[in-house]
Length: 344
Image (cartoon, rainbow, N blue to C red; front, side, top):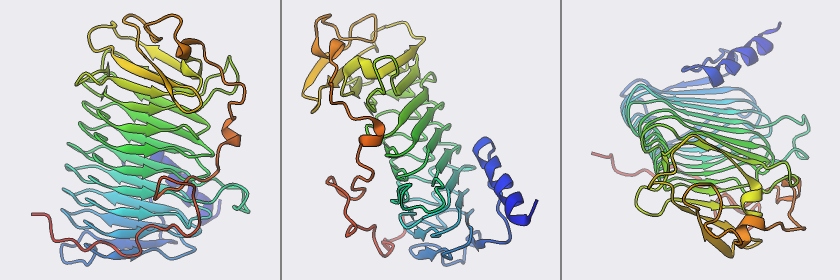
């Protein structure tokens, strides 16, 4: 193996471990020194090298903007109290390379984090390589709460919410060409969060069994491939339900035909929510008390099937990741970091 191949194998360990491995052939930015200039600033990775940014002290990369390589992996570690609070990670220009972010060893390391994934689709990427995104939230408390995650246009997106309140009140937008995997395994880990996977190939939401982990979720499902092959998979127990009376809101064009729920709960008082269906989500029904279906057996969302349901590949390749309209190339993330006053 050459050095590049060895580095690629080492970096693959990130997905199944609690640390990042980076290689000296890339560019590294050490922000562990409290006197470093990593706070309230722009950190620009070199265009054609792997990039490693280490934010391993309290508030050390707070309110900054990291611009990832055009060709190369973007690896970021946040290991101090609020070390990456209000950080922006911009990978929109990435043609070839993955984004790997680790938030652990403290509290609120990546609170209010914003991630912009690559906007390039597979037709633009001449190497036909995906731009995968992995975010691991393993800290003591609220590691990645209040985050806004825009997955890459072409690649799989893995969000691991393992700590208490780790992804609370977050918005996760899945990839148009790829799978969105969200693992809510910590207490209160995904409570009141929004998962937008309506344009993704597949959504896999798992965990949702620890105390209050998946209450009052909003879930936008991708449409099925055909009547026997849904693309929206949801797992949980009584902690997948209602916290404040709102319950789980599921948006699925073809209603329950789009969704497969693996449920180990008791259908108790927390089993509340609403299914929104139809081409414009203009029909809705309340959950039945003892199953994942509409309370009214004849409800439209129990039987709806839209013949012109687009397959995932027919969905828009790019949606506007900065505004709520179609993506156009005039849009861009902030050019400069917001040099806010220090959070006291």
